[in-house]
Length: 212
Image (cartoon, rainbow, N blue to C red):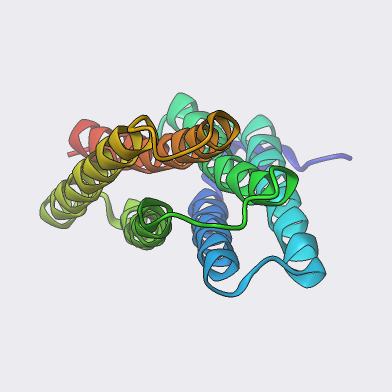
């Protein structure tokens, strides 16, 4: 595909990269909501199809962002930050999707209270993620970005506490060995998704500090 040289030299029209980030953050939120819905009401074929669709959409948004980056000379923020955010946002969707698929593959039917708590926390984290990513368009609003970062840190701390309780109960002797393996894997994957939400918030704060 040929590109007009002036289109490359000029900054992207409007907020092309930010739009991709916001779409990716919304995709993370939708995937988190789907996982929570699966715990509350069970996994169906329709939900399985939706999970795959969201996972593919996340990868597509990462590719779209990188493609735009490769065809643009002047970017609104550092190129490295754009690439990093695109990859990190996709990883969040992939992690939650992995937890969703493992519920089905592992034939987990008795969900623990800690799993429900993790699901609610990841929904809360991805909701804050959308807010944080949305603030990228106005990186001069450092106070709001810092507030969002602090909120995400609180959510991450809550997630750490839930994981600690989950692991403590998991190795209390209450569960069979095979259940320990299954649940531990799901707990860890969800915790990884939560950590990545905080990492995105941290990167956004860093971007704001560099550009103010």
